[in-house]
Amino acid sequence: MTTTGKCYCGEITYTSTDAPVWQAQCHCRECQYISGGGPNYFMMVPEEGFSYTKGTPSQFTRSDLEAPRTRDFCGTCGTHLLTRLPGRPLLVLKVGTLDDPKAYTGPEMAIFTCDKQSFHVIADGVPTADKLPPR
Image 1 (cartoon, rainbow, N blue to C red):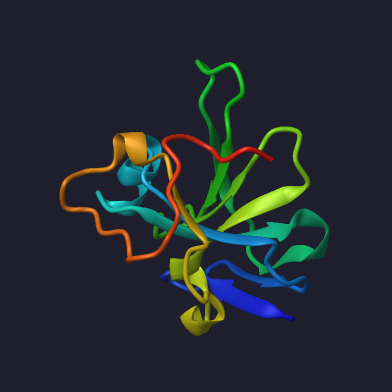
Image 2 (image 1 turned 90 degrees about the vertical axis):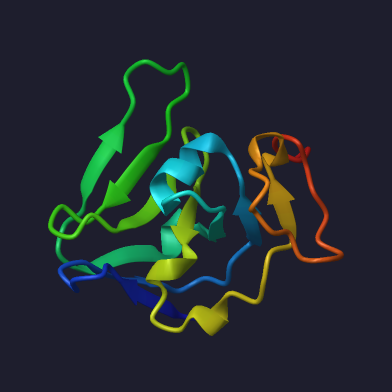
């Protein structure tokens, strides 16, 4: 399965050649900042099959956290493309950047519901976790 995507302005494009290993929605406070207030819909994909095909993203990593994530984003339009998890060979690819959002078939779980806002919606039947589910 090949997935392609880009930032809002098109300065950065990417391809992912592997199928997602997990699809979810995250309600953590950090994702709320990045999404503009709502949950963040994402697909986890193997880092090995992912590559940028145009442009070079800017990155941001908080220096005040013990195990910070690194966020790749477009330095021109600000689109958040993906999150890199420390010590894991998976990327958290943001669904809004997909060329074909239908490649995301829906969340398998809603995570970090401890930070869920009253206006966030979780579809009926989607399992939830207060934090991260066990691996």
